[in-house]
Length: 253
Image 1 (cartoon, one colour):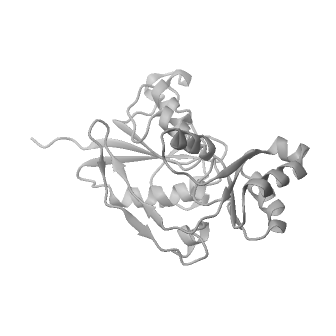
Image 2 (image 1 turned 135 degrees about the vertical axis):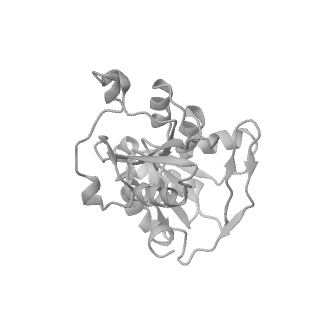
């Protein structure tokens, strides 16, 4: 007897600056999930954190923004039948409120199975400064960097610039600590470019990294599984621009 398809709920959109990237990712996953094996429901989260079911990620952003929106949380539903349910939830959310352990914690609290890393690993890896500290503690080589909080920058801008000049040498990369997709990243070739790069990064996060630039190769590898994880073959990315920025990743690539 043929098994019924697994009901998968795709979560996409979200509150971060990577909202549009999440929509692009959800479209790709939606196209490639085998409908013979999976019954797919799509849940769009708008930039204000409101949830609604939609027919497909292929809908235009204008269509996605239409209501009605609903609460995912079962304890906020007056009737159990009002609560959306699926066999497994697939967060296709990028950046804060998606990859940082927050949605993972929500799904844990709701006691529903989900795809991807758990709360601890998600939270630890989202913050680039924290991740670097963990990697270095475990003996892995990491690029030198200086973490800076916005409050520190506003109070002692010249002090931050002096510490950077004392510890790092251009070229530098300035980036938000908790964001991906190369959003908010600037390459600093000369010291006079640093202040504007810092201001740009603080548009997206209250904590940033000023990182030593190195000449290297861009490699990627996927790992799938829990008790017996399996790694893919590594792939190399050849950027068409000076570095692998947002435009190269999602617009020109």
